[in-house]
Length: 175
Image 1 (cartoon, rainbow, N blue to C red):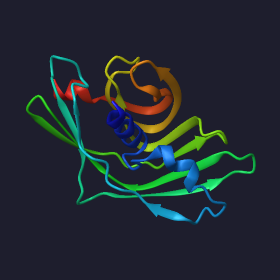
Image 2 (image 1 turned 120 degrees about the vertical axis):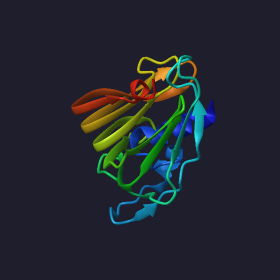
Image 3 (image 1 turned 180 degrees about the horizontal axis):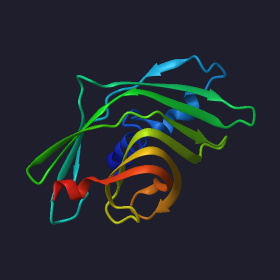
């Protein structure tokens, strides 16, 4: 489950960050400190329920260009800006989908290391873990705001609290 939390964080926000837990340590006061991000590993789970079965998520390594700018605000909040390009590959039920999941996005982390919120613009690919309120795979296009909730199985996760724009149920496309 630890691997799923890491992949969830990476793909939910921008498919660009593989290690959000270390983000506060990356903070600096220079917003020009640009850090290239590592490619998240492929992940497989029955995210769309038993009717579809296992779904594999991966990022196309040939097109992956993601970077972050991390800095500290005056109140001690860490702000992480995500930019770049990523193409999400979703395979399940005998189908393969390729999706533009490029942000941009921003994550805010409190001085104590707790996630405050995340904001996605453009294309946000959301992964809702099995057994959580927003289970499944969803593509949001437009402006999305994510909040955190605590779950028994996965710990703290992001959920989409509001959005403006278009929403696509990726599980329905795989059915």
